[in-house]
Length: 248
Image 1 (cartoon, rainbow, N blue to C red):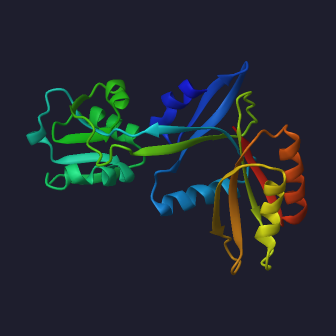
Image 2 (tube, one colour; image 1 turned 180 degrees about the vertical axis):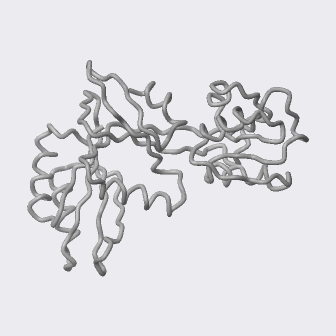
Image 3 (tube, one colour; image 1 turned 60 degrees about the vertical axis):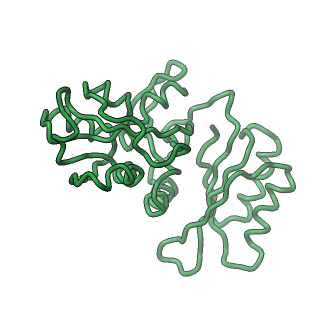
């Protein structure tokens, strides 16, 4: 699974298929942390509101190392336009700020690398990973141009089918509450009293409802654990809506 994650990260936002336990599973790569707040909010909204039954199958924290790349024979002084995902352009802003190049946002870095390769124009360059450069035959002109040495991004893999992993150790859920005093405390008490370690909690406004929020919670455990089952049962009774997003 981890190899699959690393091989598909560059194609964030695209469906892809993998073979898992002799079954072809359709999966979707989605960046979660490391994005702008607006994009992150939109990702959580899509996961919660998706009409099909969508489950998180895996996650991976990837160290981000952006590279400037272009077609073989291109020199830095030839470049007039650089293509990449908006977030990658921002993360490389310190390097780009004095270059005077036009910056064009693309849907993902792999798409940017492919466009530069297909156009075969020495005035065009892309910002992407070394792997993307090798995939599309581009030459790396400068490595590690992002401004932070500790830049990492959390990717999640979601799909229509349940994918079970023995090493699964995290449960993700989202739920909606009544707008009443103490309702969130009562909900989280099911996690606390079952001795589960909560690793993340976020809230997002519910559309068309004033002062009501949807909560996204991650905690450690497996769906088969008695403590997890007991906590989810209690949350399900008290929540207006509960959705299990995945166990991975």
